[in-house]
Length: 321
Image 1 (cartoon, rainbow, N blue to C red):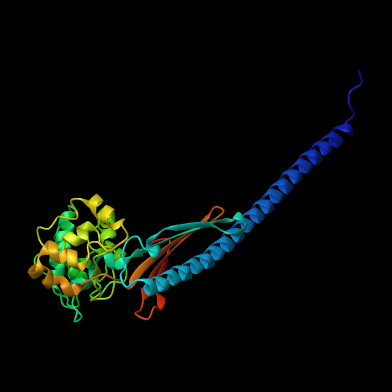
Image 2: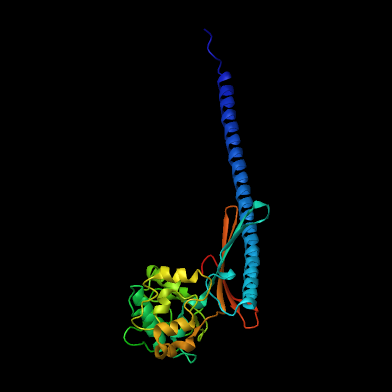
């Protein structure tokens, strides 16, 4: 048999090298094509998400305007604000072309204990309000000493209250260090800045407190049983039976009214808190959830309603209140 010539061997090697080179070129081209396609997909998805978020934000603002209109009309129809009125009913409806949904809920913020009532207009601690917050904490099975710590966070001085106050000397030792606010708070989430307060304790207290201007009155028609019972020491008529309170309010009227509370507390006791109570409200929170495809957007708006019916947003937050 005739053996291959020496000239044929280099030629075979050249064909092998050319084949490997071609395979490498194809592999690199495939990688580049996949990378370009992936980047294009990501850019397209990112642009779509940004457009959906912007669209959801505009829809949420429209829902906020609708909530303001509902509150404006409510003031024309009734001088009291209670659970069962049109403004307190949750709503949900689809968006045009079935692209998603929008949900909304209005909640009376004056039905909660106003944390800023812990201080007076002059920024001094209000002992009566501190005692009321202590009763709320006690009914929630939380340490009542937090009332003094919260009051110290808000009051204008830098002297820790006795026995459980906390001022700059405590907060500057934290990581990162910070100072006490020493002014009325704008959001109840500021409670998380208190040393050792924690998310679990915050979640338990959150439904019963608000952050409104100093001097804002409590609406007895929408207040929870715990907040109503906190008006005086030893009163647990409403918190012990929340279902009865809910049932009374389903009849479509204000309960307990100022007159009902006077009968429960007695005239002498009721007169001590009369000036801090009301049957109407000026501050409401509108919560709006917008869903467009896989995009979800949440808007929290604190709305202030004036005596003339004008409703304006005081603050807005996105994702969390």
